[in-house]
Length: 390
Ligand SMILES: [Zn+2]
Image (cartoon, rainbow, N blue to C red; front, side):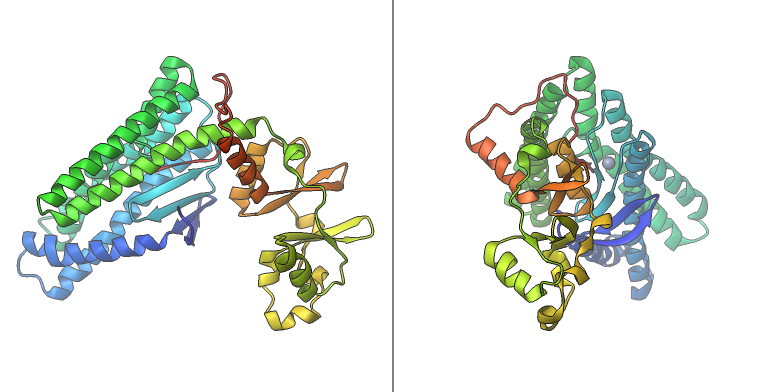
């Protein structure tokens, strides 16, 4: 969903990234504010002034969206729940949590912090607009715009669909009442799906009524919410399959091994392209020296491959992230996601005994799904898979 995002900042230990679709919405907002809303509300500015105020408003809007996300993220972090990154994209922002909240109360606090922040921002900017507006019309335009949009953000996010904050608040309440994370997720995801369909239906009728842009927008948001509600249920299933597995069940023990002096050209021909391996272990006799991945190879120009030994570009052993044979599969999947890895070596008593790949985990999941395995976790089990909220 958020592939192709690029990092623009790091705040409080959280990577702030921007998805390419964000550039579209910034351009569209700047245009529609500078050519539409502001000229309609305020007369007599120069074209340049409309554009400066319009563009500034569009960017400041996303500063307030970021504050909303940071509110979620900081509450989560204070409760010991890691938040590796926040992504800004066409529909606003998303905070990526390393795992699901551990209790209904925790989920409620994390989810409610965002809309509460938006409403506080709306109050502050609205008040500032009233006080400073008479002194400066442009400043008033920006402040009132931010106030209005943050009211919308606060209210819209409280609508009860995943991954909107309202969906999470709903789940936390259902969770508290039933004591079952699983039942609560099913309830909240069901409401979220209905809600997605409802928005798409309204969008469809707006389209028929000739409101092209509003109709399309609602159709897209409805479709996005529908997908999010479904993936929340799917995550629960995934969690059920992975919960029973550890690194020992998933690892391959026939991982390919090369000698340190083998040139990259041979590694690529004989292992990567030749046998579809995304990583090889570099070892001297029985001693593992490091791991060489497709990503490592890509850093070297192709013309240097025949002369570059594997050892020169591998990730050395002491920097390789590893797991033990008893590490649960959910933790491995979280780790792969957080560190953007495709595989992780398995160590036992300091010796490498296997390699767990992302591909192997996904194949197991597909297999379980195709067999229709009863994969839902038991009620009392605590959720641990990574998740997102907007
Ligand atoms: Zn939110």
